[in-house]
Length: 451
Ligand code: NAD
Figure 1 (cartoon, rainbow, N blue to C red):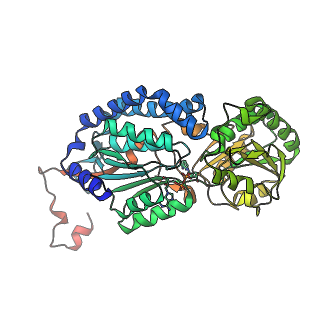
Figure 2: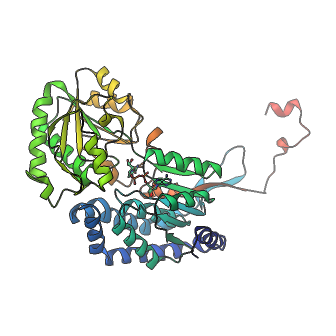
């Protein structure tokens, strides 16, 4: 089984054999996966450290811990989730018992990004397996150490006919996308999302696209400046700013902007020291190409803090930029690095002019203690999901669906929402035979219309 079509064909045969319909078998695989992951905990941290200097603590809270809790959730609830759900019958189906059956799609392709290379490959895989599918996973080629370990873990746990990890770059992804899948789950950039959607359309394959965008963060003048700055610095610079739901830029009420910037600077120094390059807690940029891209985006803008870099070391300091133009290269695309532009506003209309300048973002943040401003803002703008008075934490509640809207993606997952994503809702009516009202049968007449 060396090439992709052989792998897929073996997975197709296995799916049709009904093996993955056996819930006990799925549970056994998922429990073995948990044991395997736990046995490799330190190796996972080491791989993430090697790939982009991520600290063990960050790797625990943003990758390892989330995968383990997803596995616990699914193994504790799967028997309940798979049960056909009884639905109230309708006058039109009477007499009947109506149900929704949770049905696996079949053969699933998962393509993962590099920025959370453990979490964002394994979480979709876990939910796809839980729902009874087979999986081919392609992790990112940019995080070599973590992707290799993820592949090893999968190989140790799953027969190839059930799940397999195929390593490679664009060429391998392109080949995978020529195949006919029953479901594609893609996490990555907007341009590649469009390539995936186009390939899926060819076979009418349903897709989930977890993409990115320019996530705004509004700060008004009713907030506790220190608490807000601390939370923003944490959420922005976690993972070196390479988080799909990081605040891409701030929109700060003009009257507090200067004071807020001073507190942001202090918070950055408190977190990463005077020389973040030497901080064991500040991740690197993923590669020199991205470092160069980020460094170039600092041309012709007003850097007011940080800004130093070392391309060979994939390092850019946590950087603040004051009022970049909306037409600057920094503001034209998702930043995806440790650079935080700070825009300001006086009126609500100015906020609209900034946010509506961009596609619908994946996340949205508003820091304010003014309830009516918060509600108005949450309702006015379109975005995937958001937080009031903090960053990122909506990702951590598995009861909330996680996904984008418009250019930031389609579909959602996390917890039970993930299981639902990988399950087709089969609508089933079981008709009773004890009565058979004749009204629907021809010949028809006017009297029948009046019942
Ligand atoms: P990317 O789109 O460059 O790569 C993602 C995956 O697609 C990789 O496995 C890569 O090998 C593959 N790929 C790259 N080019 C391809 C092509 N031409 N055809 C087919 N496959 C191709 O994204 P990335 O750089 O790994 O990740 C960063 C992006 O992902 C950011 O935009 C970020 O916002 C987004 N992201 C979104 C989420 C989310 O949950 N919504 C999570 C993490 C990252």
